[in-house]
Figure (tube, rainbow, N blue to C red):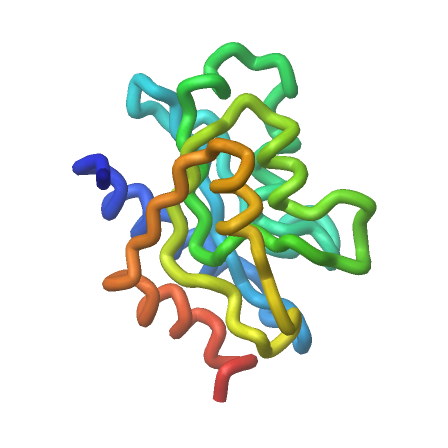
Length: 150
């Protein structure tokens, strides 16, 4: 079931993804964490603080892990959270699952271009998280990644 504001927040996450410095071999992704009250708690984008930081990781790092607002929060990410990575010990999927967030909204699934079999959505669902996909916004989110997809 889609919340009425999901599209608005995803459009904002897509705008954040445009801030990412383009990188060969890395997607440009935006992420926003929104509390149950509909207020933005944190946001982030790929390569915001260093060349290896992912959007979800950046947004989560801006809040204390025990922040009580995370329990009812939704994480919006323009791309499926990673389930495999070389640059950090934890994937974005693992970071989300270690947080109290149990609702994730994405625009598109990670293609097999960089990771042959991303299972972020499946892993989140297996652990009881609700994952909502907004495929009608996928073309806009993909367009930010023309540097990889053309």
